[in-house]
Length: 292
Image (tube, rainbow, N blue to C red; front, top):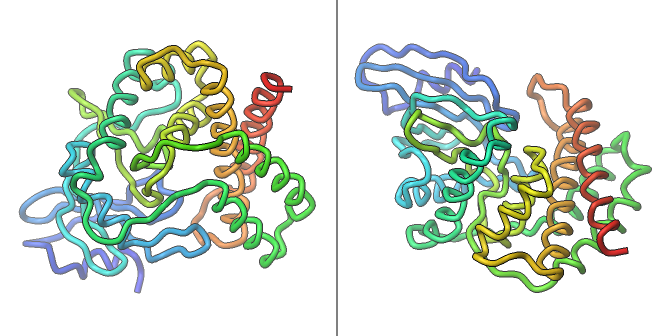
């Protein structure tokens, strides 16, 4: 059965169904569907154990995110398929989030997710701890004979130093994948979409991911930390933040390394790995330059 066949076979449709592929997804196959009643986005994807993606968790987080006013409504779900209300708008690019007004709007939305989603979350909940993910990715890369095996011991040593530098954490409900394409603007407001990796985490991971994935400047980062925490960042907060930012960049890098050998989607993961490895090295250098 093709993904399109699975979409057509969902039990939620009324009337004739028109399906259009929706680009941008590098974990799922996504479609815009028009039936007799409405337009909807359909995400087709099963559990992906090598990436610790479990669809029960994505569904629970998506429902809670809608209840918290963060994400569009879940209209229907079946095994391997999630149907979400269509929002007319545009996905953001990194240059959008480097504009201070848009960054402020995104930061407020992420803060709402951190604060409010736990009020609506039902059922079992996952923890997303990036340093566990990195260790697990390393095992997956060894098991799969990755072309990057020579890098793994050094990356794990660096990750251990970063984890120690993060220290004790505040616990919030994180999105944990703040790529610019996961922000959607409808002309009036922002929406945060795609909850594949959602779970309880330090807020520093989302903040570090927001910075690493969108090329924020040090001035942007200082403003972001002061705004989020309500105080100017001291040396201890900067140290923990820079360590987590480097961890977030390393996770995106190793995610791509794993995808090189496990994903069947048509995407240039090798180039994505190279780009994110450069981002990680810059984040690690910023951490080490600041702290010796």
